[in-house]
Amino acid sequence: MNRIDRSEIEHWLREADGRRLHELWQRADAVRRECVGDEVHLRALVEASNYCGRDCGYCGLRAANTGIERYRMTHDEILECARLAVELGCGTIVLQSGEDLGLGAKWVAELISRIRSEIQLAVTLSLGERSEQELEQWREAGADRYLLRFETSNRTLFGRIHPPRTGRTADRIAILRTLRALGYETGSGVMIGIPGQSWSDLADDVELFRNLDLDMIGVGPFIPHPQTPLGRGRGPKPLPPEEQVPNDELTACKVMALTRLVCPLANIPSTTALETLNPGGGREAGLVRGANIIMPNLTPGPYRQRYEIYPGKACGCLDPVQTVADLRRRITGLGRSVGRGRGDSANYRRRAAGR
Image (tube, rainbow, N blue to C red):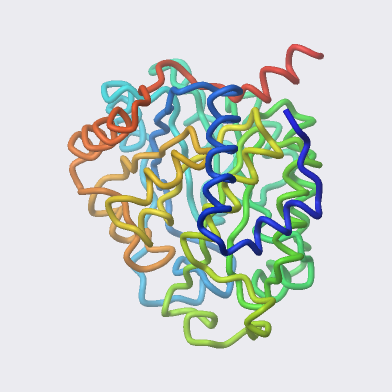
């Protein structure tokens, strides 16, 4: 397998010729087939809380948004979702929230222990920037994976759209390294098309995926919520057109394909944001350009409608049984199969075997 270098990454990101891009799509799909196979694993997403202590400039869950009705799910509500996940053939539950310190370390640890002992699903956490002590406690309780997107490798741009909590600094790269040291299957990702993001920045993002040796990588277009500074046009200004990365489906697919080439053994989801931009076809677009994971949303309907990171989020219908049935149909329609079991990252298995 040929190694793709930094200059080639940026070249492909700037490529606009559809015939040339077809070569990239074929190359990424071939690497996906060779390295992780034709199975598409389902991850059951449960949005456990929409509280957040941060004021990120684009996210509808930001603390300053007083127009949102907040919620926190109970253990029993989440466990009910986990049981449904098993019935629907998901091998993993993904617990996601805003950066909610109200989900205390002990509360989360007890929940993880119950899921692992009562239901025996793999547990992925996506709870934001948390302390090393909390991350260690959750790993000991049985958490398998942790997702923390660094969003952009441009530290200045990151700081302009992600103000830290008072008295704390944000170093997501350091946290990702801590997660790996603790034995987590470690995932990250970026937003594509942030105002002020250049093609060079985006190439640096893809290169950082490789340098971090990530096990899971999620990429998707930047979609700001209208009730946020960036949604109102405030914040970083776009670069000149020839340098500003667009927040469109094509660019997101380029990044996904290049991610598969630089991290061939990683698990890569075809994201909800792609489906939002291309309803009814976004999932397929990702799956034929390197992706091997889909995350159906099993959050109960009344909560799901209040977890609005950005407007128009494509989550399928409110009936999760129907949602998963539709996803299965779409997966098999591509000649792929729905994976069974936990679907651990081949990259994580490689690293674990080398210990």
